[in-house]
Length: 168
Image (cartoon, rainbow, N blue to C red; front, top):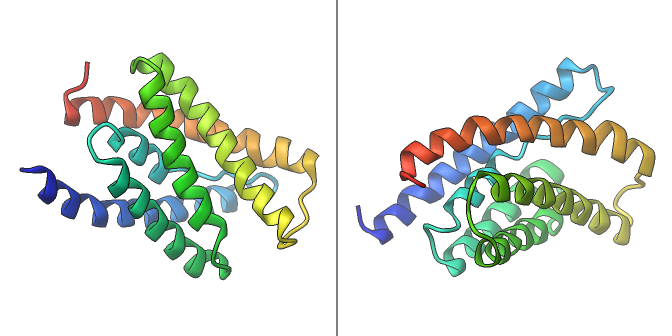
């Protein structure tokens, strides 16, 4: 399959992963009775693995479109994820160009990416006074569980993607 066909196939897959991602987030949060927020980032994880395979322009454009859809459907305010997704993808390209790609650098890059992504989204919400965020709740009940569940998904999906893309 050539590169253009892969792009046409990848976009609907990204959209379906975004839907799965949001359903997993809601399910995990419901299981914890609202005490913790377990936010999964499967879409960002898949985007991170696709960075070496697709052009920067395609990935950032796709991130803007998916972020806008996410904003309009789940948040109701356009701009938070329409800005955060492309920034995250741009950060992925920076890390990909700077670091040698193995499981350790990808793992630590993933932790940095998730932390930066959540801080950027929270920062946008604070700047535009969309919400008030308690820093202690954010760190302990949101960022901690979010990192934990995404680290687990990283190791599960890493080996699946490694076989699919035949890396290393």
